[in-house]
Length: 491
Ligand SMILES: [Zn+2]
Image (tube, rainbow, N blue to C red; front, side, top):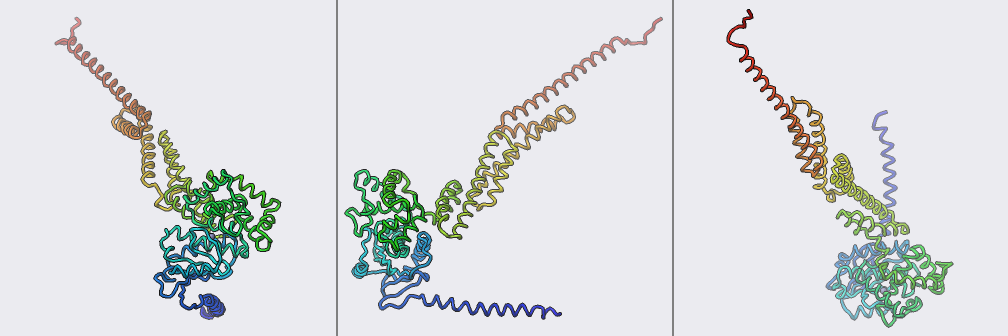
């Protein structure tokens, strides 16, 4: 059989496979094409994704394209997180962001939705129609954080509408819309203080009041309490209970019935009482905890880049908790990898501390082993977090100490051998100098004693030899004197 006849069946199979693929790919493209925004008179659009598009008036200073380019990442990220957080599997319809450059047109459009928003919220959601409207002048003057939070807040109303079949009452809706904003600690701290003082003044609104259709007299306190209510449910009941509650709202007569069913055997009154009892704890610091922040892995990455492994591990705790409930395998893998880096970094750092402590107690072998282990761990981390200078210093100190120990030992062994006196003395002296440089005074003294005792021994021998020489000279002199000038004669 020739090589070409063996190859041909494989080629046939590949050709069939590519034909099959060719039949599949165009149909996917057709589905995408049908989701392009429709034309609208006097408006132009920019598509961000299948789920998001931006609309602006034709001829406006800020075009839909400009806005889409500026906020594409923020919008896409927020929508993805919200769908996961509220366990909404698919969007009900694509969301349209309408940007207005004329106040009148914006106000007229917003009025049609009948939505009563919080005072400073200018991106107004119309959840049933999946539209978000915003005045571009005012929006453009916001800080990047505030602008992003306006969008997150409005998107939250849309996704919460989908999650509850638009049955979510005002208190839970506004509480959640604030909860899913990016953390702004001064704002959150103020909310905690407002809720705490409402509790102390006896002006705390009930959940029934918070969830009534209209706003209260004090918008700031009401919004803070809505936030506290949602934060309590998420922190103390968990996401599965929140999902059950939202699911029940689709069919229950009232939100209270939905909560009673979702959290049975506990009742909504019991939960509300527990919330009230927990307010002092919440206001004392629990308010900082926000499960939504678990989506953001940047704080952990920043801590890792700074070499703050304990900080990175603690930043990841909230992500781990979030991902126990939320199905996001890709992010879970990222968290696992970051956690691994934090663990390795922590291990490497501990080994460096061990090396330092070993050097402080002049245990050079232990120091050498610890710094070698630290080096191995750091090799698995990004090179910029490796404390190269310190590793080099510790490695060289441990090596110097080990070599000096060796030299002193050899000097001790050779110290009885007078033929090697000069070499042995030089070895002991060098060891003493190295120990002195390492601050190892005890061993420096050992080396010093060895040199001194060798020198003394040498001196003793010199003196002994000198004494022998004196004796010899005396003996020679005596011999010369007594021998006499002529041979002895006995007879
Ligand atoms: Zn709102």
